Length: 309
Image (tube, rainbow, N blue to C red; front, side, top):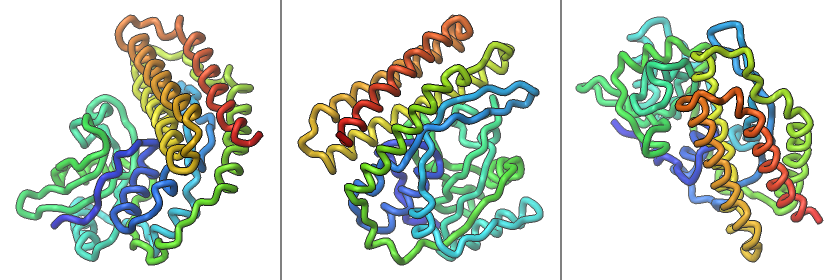
């Protein structure tokens, strides 16, 4: 049994937004500016490791509450007592045409993901079907070829779900999806909020990537997590370029700037990977990376300010 979902691959910000866009665009034809929208801010979050050490990171936070409330209706938490009850619950809800999003610890499933058998990373996954004879689920997740369908044996998914520490969900797809609107005024309001979040992040730059106390294992964890966050920021620039192509068709200069920002974030991600995993100089180089981050945030800030002037 296979569901009708098509993995969204225009860009990747995080698991929740990618699930949202996959379900929406698989269900209705909508203006792409809806998914390219700039309803995001930058935020500083604390990452906890298995040790007592922590570090702070900058992340892109999408604001999808209103959109998700319309797309995902009649939601409920997945309740289960053992492996067999979970499998039966997932299958029965897939048969009913529900959106089934179990939480998983990527340490235990999806061979192509960077966390498999290395570090614990929790995410929501989107199920796209199952095969009872082969005892497998079809799962949408990130891999080497982007956000795509992966084959996961029953026992791997249930193990990964059993290690997930938050709630998993099932829901229906809402009927009121035809009238999604995204106004020019929304873009400007979002731009103001983006700028405010950038100002806060820049003022708190000293709090970001505080890695002096981390040991080698923890630095490897830092490298995996931060490259994911920077990949998200890189993709946000791609989404911004696509938004400008759809809404500001004549603003070629800003589109070109977003292309450059996307490349700059990719370069920064690769340099951090090099300094963490290869030359082991991340502690010595972290100040340089933070200065580069500050410059990229300011460059994006200037683009949004130009739309408000």
